[in-house]
Image (cartoon, rainbow, N blue to C red; front, side, top):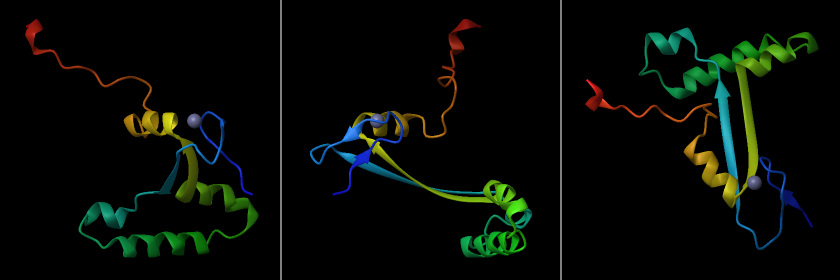
Length: 102
Ligand SMILES: [Zn+2]
């Protein structure tokens, strides 16, 4: 039997606990896409795969991580709620704009 634990708070999840799966695909933005934002996603991925093919020895494995990563995380219900409020892990809460001070 597979036991899951929350990747954020490390709590072991029982079968009765709600478990959320977060899948992330992270890749560096390429110049081609910046120049033409209407480019098809598949073209961008193809370009990334071509970059990765040129980087297949161990010395460049670290660099490859900075170009393309696919991740999967298990989260408990509490951590899921915290995650969706701040998925990029911003350090501070958004600044509340207050126009009444002037
Ligand atoms: Zn958790």
